[in-house]
Amino acid sequence: MNPPHEQSDPGALTPWLVRIPEIFAGLAPDILRELGAVTDTPLGQEYHLLKTARPEQIQESEVGTFLRWNLPMDHTWPCHPRKMDKFIEKAAQTLLAKFGQRHPQGIFMGQLNPGSPDPYYKSLASNLRGRTLLLFPTLEAGGVEEQDPSRDSLFCLVGREGLFCGMQSPGACNGFYPGGSKYISVDNPGTISRAGAKLAEALHYLKLHRRPLPPGSHWLELGACPGGMTSELLARDYHVTAIDRAPLDPRVAHQNGLTFINADVATFVPRGSVTYEAMLCDMNGPPEDSIDQVIRLSRWLKRPGLVVFTLKLPRIETLAEPCERFRRIVNRAAKGGLGLLAQTHLTYNRHEFTLFFERS
Image (cartoon, rainbow, N blue to C red):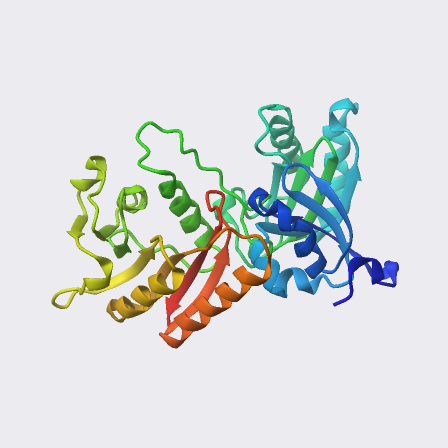
């Protein structure tokens, strides 16, 4: 692979916006190099505006796992919106001129720096979307959850650096929202742990790839303590069989729909004719051990049973080691009859990725 400065033919370069989670900021130069980036302009909190001669690498490269979200740049307007007179009207009219005939299914706006305490750009994004919706013909997707994952939407991100827009399907972007993340607060006094928010975002993300499981579906949860994810599943009217050697938080332990088994996951065997629609594994320890338990217990999964698996890794300092670990886990799962459906890095993931498998 040629380093960025050795790329030629600048006329063939394609502008693209990618989001690299802050926890991987130290790896950003290596990630962008693997994506064939010739230029890179950091934007906002986690975004990079790059130009690449190999845009297919963004969707196909192994390091794409490190990208939270991506969007081809069909329109970029470097400016300072806060200092510009009538920015919203000028921007909305420009979006209509550039994208009106491309018939997006929906229009969605976000912030380049969503973690900023300054509410200005959040309000600006909302107001710009409102004005743009008035100019466009009737859209089929009025809300985020109404989008078809396979059809193009118009996504825009705004910040002090300007306005950056493109059209792509939520599936190709790797998320329904501009930026890819569904923000879920963990500050609620009733929250058991941040793991519940992680699972909530995972289930939202999963809608890109398959229909949600209906209420009443039976989940097998491995390593459930203290119960953050358990609580989230129960709140969605799922039945949960939770396995752990440690007790669950008292706020979860006696909820309806829960069967708690105080045991080591490695020795657990379902009794009778019980089966499950889905399995959840967020266990600590070597991921090889965890996936082996998932594979062992997957014989009790109905087809096409779902597995939500957290691939926990040592501190990530290079690209090679986590990519090799990822391949090893996916290959191990495949040999056990579990096919990889999707993978992503969620807002509350640290040095870990969330993988989704189906029983094939």
